Image 1 (tube, rainbow, N blue to C red):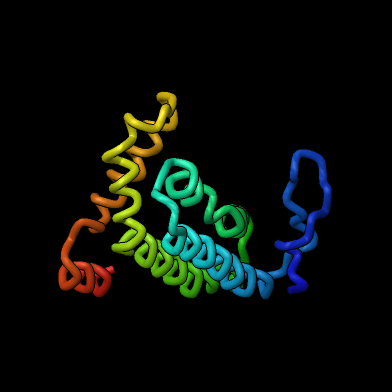
Image 2 (tube, helix red, strand yellow):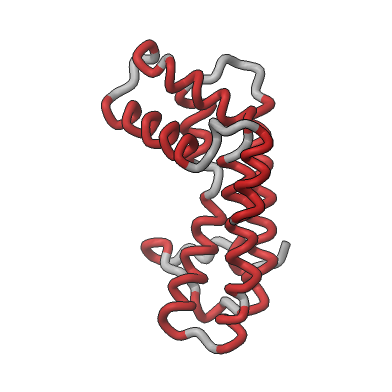
Length: 160
């Protein structure tokens, strides 16, 4: 993919190469980032090893790095100096991000692994920061409907 979001410009402090970005780069970058994220989520789900902090919580925490970068750049531009074309992208980008969040937060297989790590967090020799990340991750999933039955999850998806 020839997209400036996936090129390392080796700029100081990993600065964003704003002059290289065009409005038409955002949707393909978001789509590719979502694909990369879902591949990582599927790796977590399909991992046959016992769920633990590293292969579940940490893997989840880092699964959206590219998407976080693309979305951060987009929303900064949107808020500071966007033209009509860039603003119009919000109608496409926002639903894409919402769908991905729902697909992750309402994924029963992923949540079951997170729940196992949460229930066994005191058996893993984790430091306070790691335990906090486990707690925050688990509670975020619960608060967003991960513990609902399948019918209620579908209803929740329709509402969003």
